[in-house]
View 1 (cartoon, rainbow, N blue to C red):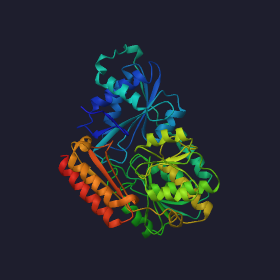
View 2 (view 1 turned 180 degrees about the vertical axis):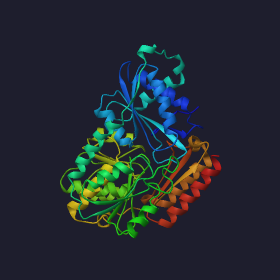
View 3 (view 1 turned 30 degrees about the horizontal axis):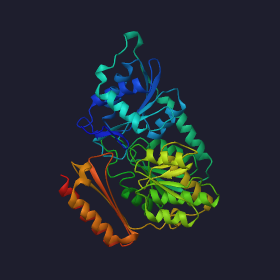
View 4 (view 1 turned 120 degrees about the vertical axis):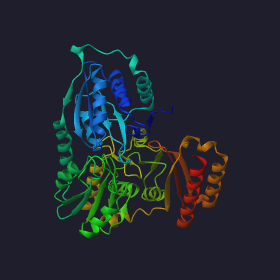
Amino acid sequence: MGRLFGTDGIRGVANVDLKPTIAFGLGRATAKRLAAPGSSIVVGQDTRRSGDMFVSAIVAGATSLGVDVHVVGVVPTPALAYLARTGPYMAGIMVSASHNPAEDNGLKVLDSDGLKLDDAIEDELEALIWREGELSGVGNAQLGRRIAAEDAVEAYREHRRGLARSIDASGLHIVLDGANGSGGSVGREILEATGARVDAIHVEPDGVNINVEAGATSPGSLARAVVDRGADVGFALDGDADRLIAVDDRGRVVDGDQVLGILALERLTRDALPGGLVVSVLSNGGLQAAVEAAGGEVVRTPVGDKYILEGMQVSGAMLGGEKSGHVIILEHTTSGDGIVTALEVLRVMTKRTASLATLAEAISLLPQQQRAVKARHKDQWEGDPTLRRAIADATARLGGAGRVLVRPSGTEPALRVMVEGPDEALVTELADTLATLAGERLN
């Protein structure tokens, strides 16, 4: 069997690939490796129906080794990270598949600093999961307890409201898309603390509609709402509110690369981009060109926000993120937080008295196309000579100004293909050709 942990925890189709027995084993493994009898961990979830099932399994596993489990209910992932870092907890576990379809779910483990785990520690947890039956339990008097802790989230809300109150966005009209996930209601409340008028859409989760034609992965309805309502800006969260995609007043999507560019260029004007801007290999070459033209530096890492954070820690950077909308602003948070990112965009808009459209014009992106190809054998693409030759040919056709990036997804059974270059028609043609070939060769 392949490795359980991907780039963002353990994910799979709930109750099919990802069964509650895995969550039970993870609860025991986390209690054994990261906690101790008599200590506590904190657990939260997004709005998927399967979340309750997995939380119950984690609770059963951890309490069987004498660890108390504080259950905070439906919360954004960055809220759980905040609680893990500031509360009396040895670790945190978030039950969420983030932007994935509603039928999926996932398990993310955070340490006592609210950070995702190193690969080596994930490997230790995985080994413990597979032999959890060998772990000795505790007697009745030493069993851990399930503790209802929904009120603990108020500390996160108040911290973010404090950030919001430092921004005067009165007079602005915002539309917030909550993706029917865990950040809709808290996001609206925090954005309103800026003084802005906030309309919220897709904030009626029913357990099966998370991310369905809504949120950061599907911002079309937000774009229409912004135009129809005459709003100044739109913000789309994903299912667990750790990423943000913006929409300008004309209904045009402003993706994570442009958001990062807007924040980076503003920081460069006040000499506040130490260590450069840290982005993944997927980020657009146009972003790098804009930042470097303004005197900044761009550092690239593998895909995954935990690798972004590692890169930031190495370079001393305070700003980093991904094209997908994960943005880490270290003076405020150690993880991606779509709500904080929205606040920072508002801060720049109000400081510059400029629209989002005007700010985004400073980051001219190269044509880029990405394809996710369902592939049963996603990890074997490098061993296929036909596919390798096609990638080499595509790279040659793009010339020195373009690039092709192929990688197995870390969160789903798919091969991801990215093609970037100055010729939009050629980029689209090559992306389609490679995606089709990969689908034929790897299934």
